[in-house]
Length: 594
Image (cartoon, rainbow, N blue to C red; front, side, top):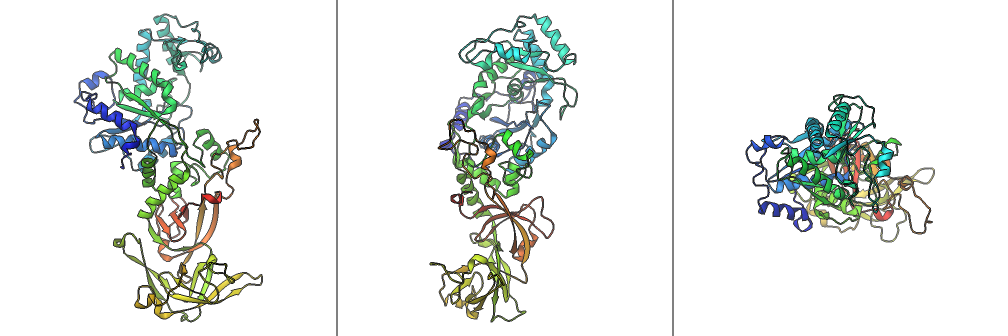
């Protein structure tokens, strides 16, 4: 796991200060989440810190989640700690096992693990429901919670505004006995959804609206993906989350800035329960950082769902989506995400990062990792008239020019080859250095050839190019440098190459800020982000590939020389018939508007 850079990570400084002060030195760990008494009877925690990645399983992870995953797992590894993988599955209406499986798969793909030889820190908040119910009952008995029987509209009307205090509920002063009895009846399923709600009793005049008696338990008659029909009351996220952290002995609870206003309630919940001896001190510390904002993509869950449900893309793993499942299928490298995270750092300040920064990190990693192969994406036949028919020989190409230890591969060479159509011009433009009548160019890894002309169809389209080769100029032989040429062509043997489907992907959106108003728009103009979809974000072609690519395995990635980075599709590739997706071009093509 790569480190997040110290200069750009204020969270690291907080952790270092906490460790230097011995804040967590006496913290104990029972080997699993539990109450204060259970941890108190256990040995000192071998982990110096504990962080967590706590997604709700109601969708697929996206690029923003990758930032949080790498931060939490990276800091835990750096400081000799543990990072917990926890599902915040407290909402039975939106959560599904499909999302659980996808999330675990994506976290593993990024190279992160919640398990080692001593601990397996995979947890589900729904397994803590018994404790959460116990804590809610404690708050009732301590006078810190009450059952409110107002409708949602009535509660909203009494909540107040940023400049006006809220009003107490008419049910706020119910007796402890009445609250306890009503809460028991809620648990027993006697009431319909919305009939009652359990609220914390804090301060309806608080300047922080989140402290105006927030809801902590609601009635929901719904089947839960993990607990089935055991429960008909469920904790609110803002109540459950601090409890989950405390039960798991999390030291540093890292979240994005939108939770900053919730921090006082986070601390209130855990303080009240620690006062009752239910949670171990020191309590978790919530720390906020800025979320990821990138140009040319949308990370809103609502918008991602719309793109999928309305079939603007082909499912959650469409290579054009900024989901981690889509990134994996497109061929992005997990190492590229780590390098990107290092470069952007961690701060409290919101900023919009150019998508090209992400792509550059991916290119840098892929250039180091990916073996080279040759593919001709727009094939045009090249006929070497003075090469014997039926004769073939081997040419040799390095698997990776930066890693000679990876050796070479054999590329068969014959009389007929496939070259890129753009490598021939019958009437050359100024500066064109490849094939045109009378010009010489090198077939990379092969011979120098001289163009002699071309064949055309009845419509005047060039269908074949003719040339002669210079037998003493083969690459790797003493005569290779005997003639100097400026043009260099990629090729594959027509007799040995095979056709394959290639999917050329570009950015899904054609503008940096999809759906945003633009200069010159009238004040009442509202743009739909769907109108900014790039119509050329996916293009299918049939290319001619060198034979070595036929055995590519799903998710095996290569640099196709001259063209970019490609991966064998993990879904549609079959044995001996890989389908390739383009992850990236060799250089940034954003200037083209895509």
